[in-house]
Amino acid sequence: SAAIGGYQAGPPITTASGYLGQTAPAANLRDSIGLMNVLKTIDDHVGMPNLGPIPDYLRFAKLTRPPPYDGKDDDLEFNVWLGKVLAYCRRLHLTGPDMDPARLDILQDALSGEASNWFHTTVESTYRTQLYWSFKEVISALYKRFIITDSFQKASYEFQNV
Image 1: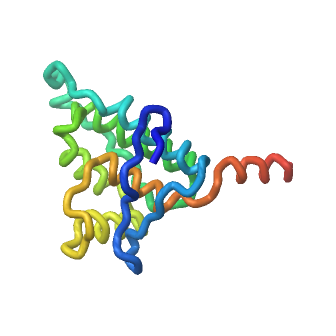
Image 2: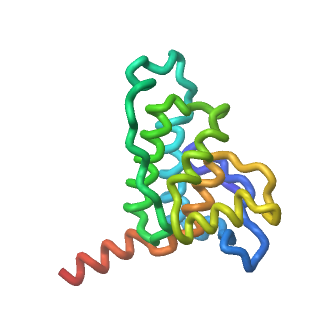
Image 3: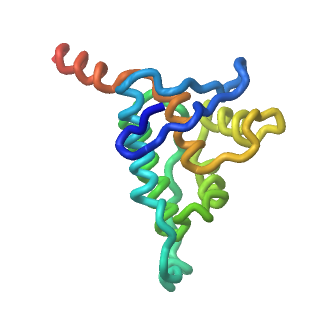
């Protein structure tokens, strides 16, 4: 597939049909733009490894965990939630590709309801169809699975009905 903004899309992340984890590839430009935004946000916040040690104050600070995401079909809510998860990971110096397993642990704790069920079925279950997942792959698959409504179309509808 063609590169979009420097991101080369790989094969779609899917699971066997019938599972909660079933996802679909980006079907149109709107989905591609939304997913590209999510991937860029991840790269911007946690893509590069930290160069220094964890500051002393963080060893004693009690950080507020990110709120759970329950799988609601709301692009803005998903992106705000993702920003909070990424900020939490960044504060803990869980950045760079080597920290994917730790970020996946944080992510698992930041899911509830259908999203938590999806994570278990798709990422953790012994019946999963993909053995290893990167943080970006899981976030991409979450986005594809739960963000279905076209946020541009929704905004246009709300504007017309003011």
